[in-house]
Image (cartoon, rainbow, N blue to C red; front, side):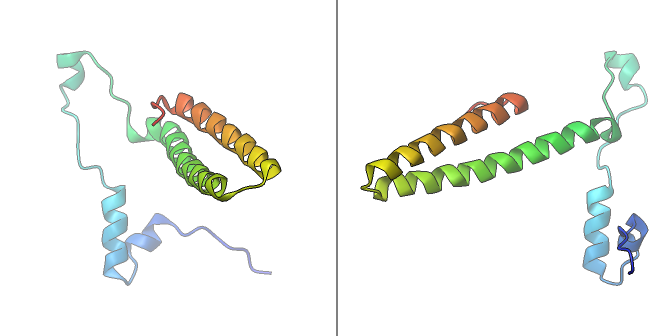
Length: 115
């Protein structure tokens, strides 16, 4: 059985499709550079992209989770509006509370204000 391998950056930057090449290059390029004198002038160390990598991943995943939870909350609210059954209503309210708790937890982690 042939093992699947993750494509390398070179495979994308030398791809035959110019749009793919351009997109990959745009995504991997750093548009801004700090002056060599930045630390001397401001006495501030600015972390590199590599140093922020883990945090960027957590923020991206958290943001994706928030979008999914928001969608689930809206779906639950719609079901709540349309239900007449008390038992189903209680189940939906519990689900709504659980989703809201998860949303608050993720927002706390991200340092966001709940909207």
